[in-house]
Figure 1 (tube, rainbow, N blue to C red):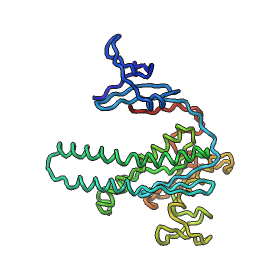
Figure 2: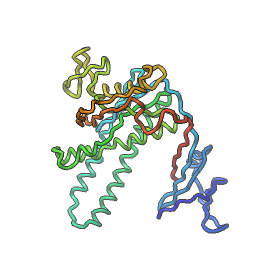
Figure 3: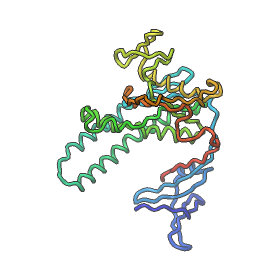
Figure 4: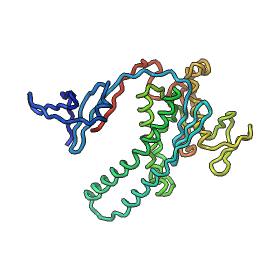
Length: 315
């Protein structure tokens, strides 16, 4: 049972919930919940059969970034490169191992009963999420904390349409399609964006086109080498594929900085009318054709910097 209440009140460490006119139920809140809610505006309370969630909000002011961190999301890792030259890699292989284990367990279920199958799959799906979410939360928290310490903005690729590439009949193995369709790139993006905006950090999205193939040193097109390495025939540099992509993503945020190229954010690039757009995969990421170099996320650059963000805490 799910119930949302707005006529509540928090006083003396107790949550007062109305059940009837002038009749209330009191719930004692723990010290952690009271500490989190301190100084914030509680908006609503949601009750389920086994949990209680309190939604609260705060006003944030967007910080002018002193630099940028580029986040390259891959299936087995997340590589982060900042404009000061620092590169960090976070391993996600444990999360993929958990998903593979649960896929195997569910594949062994042979009972021909759709209702029982749906109930069992829902149970294992919840267990999988409960084990994977803390891993993603830890990675996103460390990325945002580092960016907040340096007052850096966050830059990510705008990945869209990836699920369409791995449907049945796409000439890829069933196991490979299952791994790619279970990739939590969207959930990791959601966590990083929300936590960054909660801290007042700017979040920018750039097109995913050629972020892995273009040399982050000279901008020339690289050639494939061995063990996920790239070689640039122009400057002769040997680059790690993920590190190169993260550096290119970080440099994409510089066009929105005060020191960026003048007028670049207003230039519009159009293909000829008779040009044919071909979608292909660049290192596991959908190649996109950028139609404009303005900020490609959902917000306009002219929006006010004061934002009203909502968060939830469970007790």
